[in-house]
Image 1 (tube, helix red, strand yellow):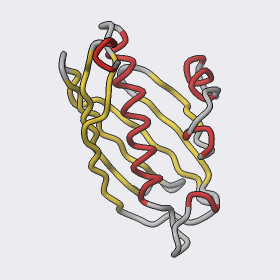
Image 2 (cartoon, rainbow, N blue to C red; image 1 turned 30 degrees about the vertical axis):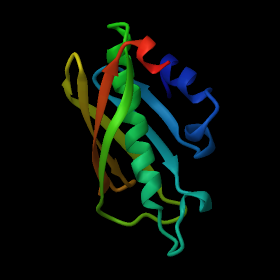
Image 3 (cartoon, rainbow, N blue to C red; image 1 turned 180 degrees about the vertical axis):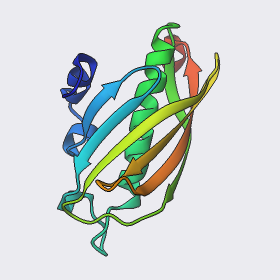
Length: 139
C-alpha cells in the first residue's frame, strides 16, 4: 500500500503516470516503485526499452534528491545518468525498483538505483548525479 507522499506523487500528470509506474515509498533515505511491463515499454525485439529503465532510475533518484534539497530550500536538476542493462524483461513482467543516496552534499547528490524482476533478479542498475540549486537559478 503506497504511503501518503507516494499517493501525491502518483497523482501528478506526466511520464510516471503515463508509464504506469506506481511510487510506493518516498523519503530522503529511499524511494521505491513497481510497474507491470506493457507493450508501451517495449523496443523492437520485445524487451523493455533501455530508456524506460533509465527513466525509472532517474525518476526515483530525482524524487529522493528533491526531498533532501527541499529541506534546504533548494531544487535539484539531473547532471548525469549512468544505467546498465543486466537482464531482459518482457511484456507482463512485474518489475520493482529502489533508489538510495550515496551522497547528499550541499551542492550535489549521487543516488544509486536497481530494478529487479518478481524473482528478485537484477534487471538494471544505475547511478544519477544531481545538482542542488537555489530556486531562482532556474529562471
